[in-house]
Length: 385
Image 1 (cartoon, rainbow, N blue to C red):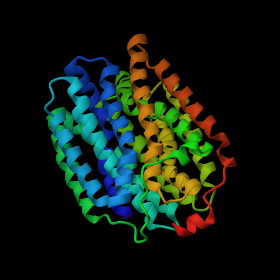
Image 2: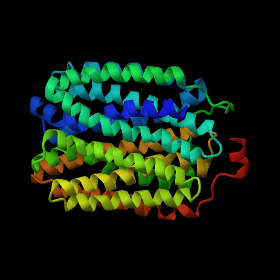
Image 3: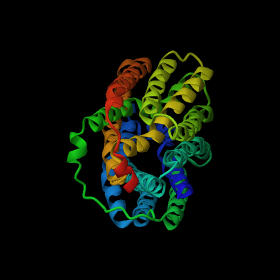
Image 4: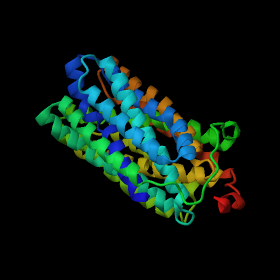
C-alpha cells in the first residue's frame, strides 16, 4: 500500500508540478499576461483542494480503488483535451478540472489508506508514501522541459496523458482498504471546524499555500531571465522536489520518536526563511540553495500534515479530515500565483512578488505557534484506530 501510494503521488504531482515548464511556451503562444496564465495552475490547485473532502469521503465509504481509477481517467482526458485548446481560458476547464480532479482522487484516498494500514510507525509509512510527490516533482518538470524542446508543449501533454492514466490505473488495481474496517462518516465537519486547533491549522495552511505555489510557477522563468537555460531553469523545480523527498522521509521517520507538532512548526519556519534566500538570489547557485532549503521545509510540511491530523484528531475520519484541511491550499493558491503575476506585470520585477510570498510564509509559521497547547486524540481513540 505504501508503494502504491508513492507511485500514485509521483504520477499525479509529477504532472501538476511540471506546469512551470509549460508556462513560458503557453504564455508566448497565447500572448497572455503572467497572472492570467498562472491562473490555470491556481484553478488546478483550487479544484484538487476543493474536491479533497469529497474524494476522502467517497474513499472512506466505497473504498479507494474506484476513486483512484476515476481520477486516472479524468486526468488523462483533461491533459489530452488541453493539448487541443486554442484559447487560454479553455485550459482553465480542461487542465484545471482534469488535473485537479486527478490529483484529488489520488492524494487524499491514498494517504488515508496508508494511515489506516499502520498503527506503529504510521508516521514513517506516511512520510515514505508522500515522498512520491517529491520524486514526481524531481522528474516532472525536467522531463517536460526536455520533451517540450523536441516535441512542443501540445505533444508533451498527450504523452503525459497516456503515462499518468496508465500509472494511476495500475495503482488503483493494487490498492485495498485497510484490514480493520472504519465506519464511514458523512461530510459533517462542524466539530472539527469549531476546534481551535483545526482553525489554526487551516489558517496557517492558507497562508503557506499563498507562498508555496509561487516558485512552482515563476522560479523557472525567474532563472531564465537571469541567464539560465530552459532545462536548468526547469531543473530548479526538480531540485525542490528532490530536497522535499529528504524532508518527507526524514521528518516522517523522526516524528515517530519526536514531537510531531514541533517538527511541523519547524518545517514551516524553514520554508518561510527560504524565501529570504530567493529574495537575495543574485545567481543560479543561490537559486539552487533556495530550492534545496525550500524543498526541505515543503517536504516536511506535506509529510507531517497527515501525521498532525492523526495526532490531534485520530484516524477515524482521516480521509474526510485531510480533505477538509486541504481545501485551504485552494484558497491560498488562488491568491498567491495570480497576485505574484499581477505584481510582476505591474512592476516589471520579481522582487516585490517574492517579498510578498516571504511575508505570507512567515505569517503561516506565526499562526502555528499556539498549536502545542492542544491535547492529542485520546489513547482510546488511537487504540480503536
